[in-house]
Image (cartoon, rainbow, N blue to C red; front, top):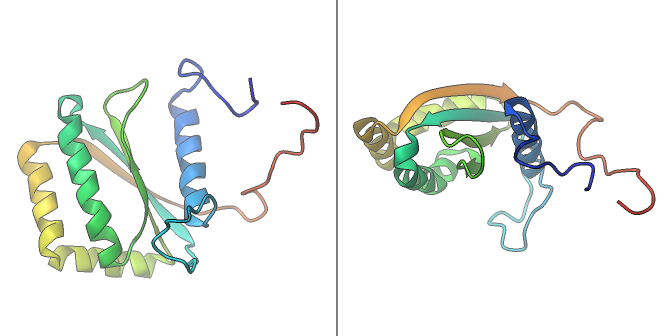
Length: 158
C-alpha cells in the first residue's frame, strides 16, 4: 500500500480533517488544476474558510442540491470555491465546504454580497425550511510556508 493511502477503517475524524484541509489548500493554491478550469490566471488566496456541516443523512440529495447551488453563487459573490464534499464512506452525516479568500476583509465583503444576492438568500431559506443542516462550524486556515506541496522523497517502488 502507498504510504499516503488509507482504508476507511484507518481514517478517523482527525485524519479526515487533515486530508480535507490539505486538499482544500492544494486546490486553493492551484495544484491539480484541470484543463477545463474556469479561471486561467491563478489568484493568490491566503486563507480558506473550512466549513464542517452536520447534515440530516436522510436528506443527502437535498444537501447536494444546496451545495450545487453555491457553485453558481459563491464565485459571483467574490469567493474562490474550492469545493463541497459529501459523505461517501464512513460517517454519513458530515459534509464539507471550502471557500478561499485573499484576506478576512475579502471574506467580510463576500458575506455582505451574499446577503444582498437573491439566489443566495433563496438557497439559505431552502436549507432552513427543509432543515438540511443540523450544525455548522467554520474555521479559517492558512498554509504554513515551507510545509505544503512537498513531493515524496522516497526512492524506489512504492
